[in-house]
Each structure stands twice: as structure tokens, then as C-alpha cells.
Image (tube, rainbow, N blue to C red):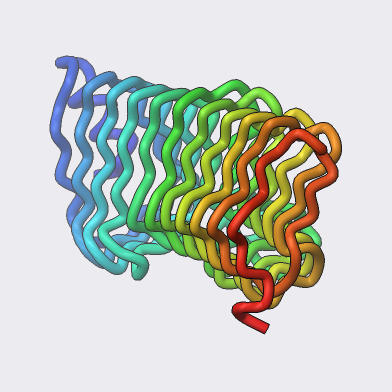
Length: 256
């Protein structure tokens, strides 16, 4: 039995709950049924991209699962990885987590793409027009590009307690306005650790720890207006080129 076959059979009756038994599934399932709940047993290996295209889908993993990427195009979905020993690995094929819908929550999972792979894939990307998405308590083990990239059209994103171990580009880059970056850790970024880019207006970086940056610790570019950068501990000074932002009470030598 495949996950796709289960979705087809159960989805005909409307909302459902599916238990995925531990094992290896060589497929890329798409869950399109609204109000579905999928519970994945510990140690399951899904060798393909999981797409959530319906609304109000819950995807709950047991510990130690291995998956090859997650794409959320639906809204009001919830993903819980069951801990950082469940890993979504995009490798050199795709982003580890791609959120395109709105009002989604992803937590308690590890994410990575292949460092040095030349594929320019991120640990997390919000590339389009999603609103009010939340990512919390995740570990980005490594990333071939920016660990977390939030595009102009994605607004009101919350990053809470995200741990970035290493990445080949920036740690966090947001061009999405009203992004909130709270209590995150960024280590071993090859470029700027956190950048509030142009159109990233009214964003905030609060209570983060930024260590071993290859560039600026926290960079507020000239067109990122009315941002707040307060109470962070960094390896280097915060750069504020906006002229309209509040930058205060940051300890820039705490980790040197």
C-alpha cells in the first residue's frame, strides 16, 4: 500500500485520519483532502517530496523519520516533526521546507540541504504570498543557500526559537514586511547572519544570539524602514542603514 493510494481511498469519504506504518515509501505523496490527519510512525522513510495542498491538514511524525522535502501550498496546515531526529533533507533537489500558503505552523523538526552542492536550495523558503505562517523550534543543520529566505510577498511571518547550525549563505534574510525573528540562534553563516532586506519594513529581531558570522551580524538595509532590533547578543555590531529603525540594547561583543 502506498501513501497516495491511502489518500485516494480515504479522501473519497472526505476528512480522515491515516496511520502510516513504519517502513520505506518510495513516492512523493500529495495530500489534498481538507481536514485530514496523517500520523507517521517513528523511523519511517519517505523517499520523496510531501505536498500538502489541502486546508487544515495535520501531519504528525514520530521520532527518527527521514523525508526528502515538504511543500505546503494549502492553508491552516500543521506539521510536527516529533523532534530534531526527524529530518527533512532536500539534498541537491529542492528546498527542505517550502511554504506557499497562509496560516500554517511547522515545528519540532530538523531541515537541511546539501552544503557545497551548488544547487542554491534553502533550508526554509517562503517564496510567494503566504500570510501569518509560523516556524518554531526547528533546527537547520546546513543549507546550500540562505538558511531561511522570506520573499517580498510573504508577510507576518514568525520565526520563533529557530536554531541555524550552519549555512553557505545568509542565515536569515527577509524581504517580507512585518517579519518577527524572536529568540533564534544563527551560527556559522558564510554571509550576513540576519538581514532585513529592502521591503522588509516593520520587521523585528528580538532576543537572538548571533555567533561566528561570515558577514554582518544583523544588517538593516537602507530600504528596510521602521524595523526594531533590540536585546540581541552578537559577534559584531548591528548595521542600520535605514535611518528609521530602532536599534537598542544589543551586546555586540558578548560572543567574541
